[in-house]
Length: 215
Image 1 (tube, rainbow, N blue to C red):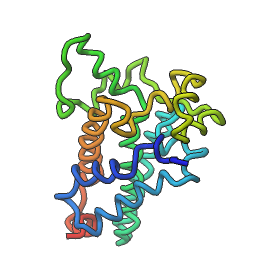
Image 2 (image 1 turned 180 degrees about the horizontal axis):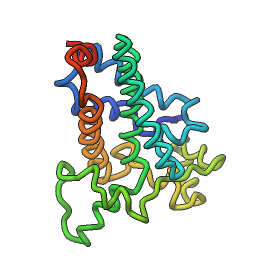
Image 3 (image 1 turned 90 degrees about the vertical axis):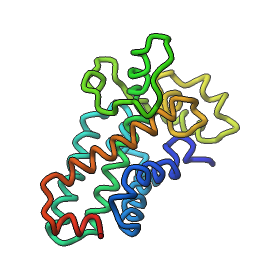
Image 4 (image 1 turned 180 degrees about the vertical axis):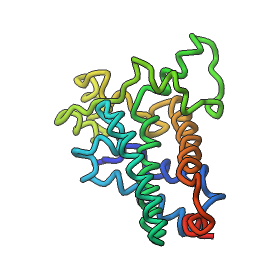
């Protein structure tokens, strides 16, 4: 069963973290952050944890989860526990990435061009307040148990004909297989990761920076 075909593939989460933060962290710290990020996609993280993946319109829960992990990152560094800080920040970044892969934020941004050629993916604004508060912003709903069969590639086309268009199966931008919008989701996630890093490290003492960056 190709389970990871319906969640942003591990390699892309790792690529986003590397593109956004490779110049900031040591290889050891970056590896720990990426490991914690990808751990959110374990099987147990897929059930009852909409806040991890911004599924089922769980925007508030996901935003709260990001702030919870940010608080844990800071608290861990104050306790001289860099590893726990890396893990918490990795979990934070996973939710930030999935916001763009699992919601219609990219669609709303592209709709502004009204049929004209849109700006390049690198030009996307990942925190446009108008879009973040747009009344039509929504994320994919997970329709169990039918959607489980979407995970099996040979059945995917058949299953899609029975799943609503507001489903995670139809909406996800988890891999290049989903088309050109995937590039916009990637670039938005890279930019958002940098924003979350800046927000998290704001006000850090010199010692906290040294521990967190592992340099």
